[in-house]
Image 1 (spheres, rainbow, N blue to C red):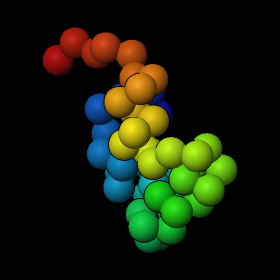
Image 2 (tube, helix red, strand yellow):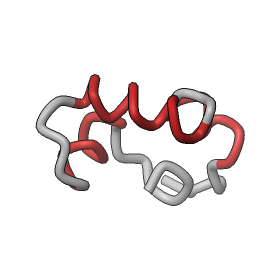
Image 3 (cartoon, rainbow, N blue to C red):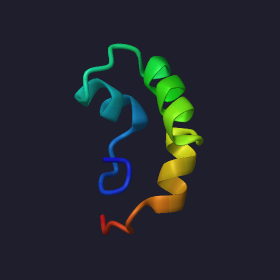
Image 4 (cartoon, helix red, strand yellow):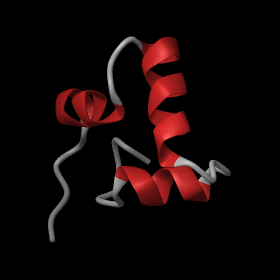
Amino acid sequence: MLEFTKKTIEQIAWAIGYEDPSSFRKVFHRVVGSSPGEYRHRFAVALSA
């Protein structure tokens, strides 16, 4: 979702079952090694509006 949508990180966290977006960010960083925002910046596919 980070790569292919423009949804906010909060919306993505809620969509995948996290009640607390902060927890999602922490787990994501621990597993991937970067924040969700950094990951999106690096790997996002350009989407037209």
